[in-house]
Image (cartoon, rainbow, N blue to C red; front, side, top):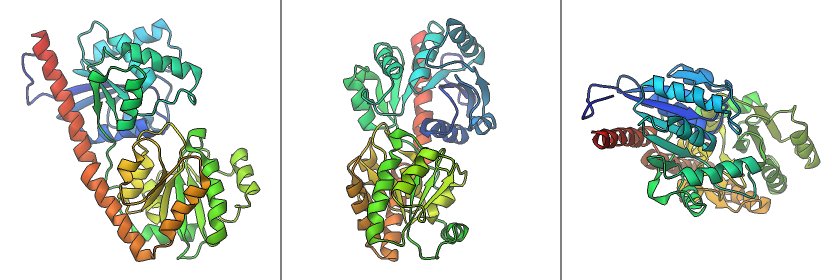
Length: 390
């Protein structure tokens, strides 16, 4: 898009640079944005610094896609030069970066090209938990944070933590995650389907955790809470969904066996039917102990009309509001007690609470409303660039 003013008939062309395309919160958010801001109004090019991942096919279906196959942690000069060539050749009006390594790599690659750069940060700053190289990248980002036109966070808590770590506060903007409430919606039939698939009674109480197995997600906390909860609610069943949540994970299987939960914990591994899984639950949960700025799994479950019990990380209290329960991190007794508060409700009361949760997502975090914020941002930044250059 060139000229002295934005032509309403022209497409806005956005180049997205992201660290990788394996399943994760940032990667999923990018997919949703690309699938919402479609041609002819918007055209997208995506550059993944790493090799192809589980979401590459989904991205490639809606955008021109490049994989650089580089090591994002230690990019070589030739990697940055390849990225610069793509930035220059793309004809993009704005570069939108996703996550720390992509922020720095794309900023260095785009320097001097006159294309506005936006940074995206979608995690919390936890120096005591993050790897040494990641900490160095984050500190480097603080030094470079005056260069992007804006630094986009999906969480107020994340913005404040990064500003305290030296990120330029004058460039801060918070845009929360958005959710497709047509895809993630209540589905009464899903409840019976999952129970039949697991050979469970139709009225079995089902509590679920959708999360890849990673220390940040704190599956150990969830499982310890499950063992405590099962004492008072012995007929409850628990489902774990996500990469690593499968029988072949020896460490996870050992924890389940040690807590004597083999008969009530069901490992479903990676699933593509998350909306159906969520809709089948009585209670959705998140047990994360750090790092999460805005957990997608909470918003998705709420959109499906399921009340949530989640640990207090990032913006979780603001997301859940009065439609669920927020508990301290690393406290299985508190997590089990939170489940108990919802389990004590009768089924109609739990459903009513879940519908309030869905309404909260519709009102505050709908995908069209959030995507419109990005659309307005892109247009505004491009217009400012044209004025500045003209």
